[in-house]
Amino acid sequence: MSNKSLYGEQIIYLSKHPKNFRPIENADYKCEGANPLCGDRVTVYVKVGDDETLEDVAFQGSGCAICMASASMMTTSVKGKKRAEAEQLFDEFHRLVKGELDPAREEHHLGKLTMFENVSHYPVRVKCASLPWHALRNALENKGVASTE
Amino acid sequence: MTAQAVPATAATLDAVALRADFPTLRRTINGRPLVYLDNAATSQKPQVVIDRMHRFYTEEYSTVRRSIHLLSAEATRAYEATRRTAAQLLNAPETRQIIFTKGTTEGINLVAHGYGRKFVGEGDEIIISATEHHANIVPWQMLCEEKGARLRVIPVDDRGELILEAYEKLLTDRTKLVAVGHVSNALGTIHPVEEIIRLAHAHGVPVLVDGAQAAPHMPVDVQALDCDFYVFSGHKACGPTGVGVLYGKAAWLERMNPFLGGGDMIESVTFEKTTYAPIPHKFEAGTPPIAEVIGLGTALEYLRNIGLEAIAAYEHELLEQATARLSAIPGVRIIGTARRKAAIVSFVVDGIHPHDIGTLLDQEGVAIRAGHHCAQPVMARYGVPATARASFAFYNLPSEIEALGAAIEKAIAVFAV
Image (tube, rainbow over all chains, first blue to last red; front, side, top):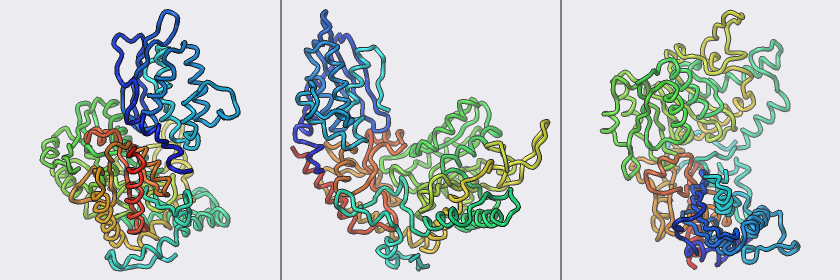
């Protein structure tokens, strides 16, 4: 496997220029995700509409390229979706990066998130990709700090 | 075994020949020769150590001390031979001052329990340094919490050198112990432990030296240092995991509480009272890691045959070459530039997280550590969440430093999108 297969141009670009990298004033939900073993740290903010739609999702923090790009893609992927749809996406994404979902053979809703498929070949980096998602889920469940450890 | 006694110069250490002793170094990673630069985490094992443990399990296996048959007598003899080898390596005055532990972490915990619970009380203070790894922080924090004592920390300057003037001010009548690393695993700094010990003893304070990063890389003389305790791990010294050494002055060890209770650490047991075995057995409860202790003995003999002075001199040359190579790469910043350093180079690269560096280097077959190195306070001191760390052993080659430099340059190119 070449470097590019994990660090595709889009992942590197998003890690340097993440989308929705900002706080949300008066967010309905907020949660910090931390990975104590590598120091990755992201705070996810969510604003939810009356019909359970995630009207706005944003994040701030610092971490490796995989974590930052994943957080960026997560915010754009779940924005406008219903809470249940976001949870389903998290489940599919988590299975994707763990190598339990083959996007070529199984039905899914991942879209561009499939660019993280090769993370499954790097078991120690799965937690980098999934940290922002854990933070999102904990935010929506009001569970406090999320950790991938 | 190819290791022969050599004079103490870098030029006479034949690293190419020594590499043949290490089967793992023949591996390829992603189609490239393995460049193993994670020696501060753990070292590779020479064939003699692997063979010795294999032979023990296949031909000699038995328990130690408690049985009366021949196999047990042989196992006990081999086990105790390692104690002598360790004592000689550290220049300990007596073999009974060598205690086998699970490793550095257990050695420190043993002293925290055995010494700390007996001699540390409310309002007392324990001094550590700002560069310690978690193994030399957490046990003391736990002790302080239990006893109502206080942890004091020797600060470190921007180069990674301890500020001795500040240390002197920390030493008071309340100080009950100083616990300091010989070499920082995160920065490579060789701490001035001789001076630290001298100043502590002037206040009547004993000193524990954490030698995890020193004992396998430089000569250590516990009598010359006059340290009260010295600990190191087998697995960083070409030996197996799960075994380490605690040296202690007999006067302290005899007064200390046992660490773990159980078989082999007793003199007599009734339901009313137990009396304890003399040192070192007072601190070696239960069936020890016998094969690992015997393997450690072979590893320490192997290092001694090469010569710790020659190893230190050779690794210092590697340090200078690596420092020069990495310093010349734009965007690379070395964290820890002390004047006295072991062969550890911690670094960050502009715009690339250390974990990404670690993965990209791995793609080139270069194994380094990336993270906080179990030394989060050090990372906080330098304002970085983590670093990439290349750490060297006597079996590393200048060509591997070039491979490291080239891999870093390639990583920078990958991220130049």
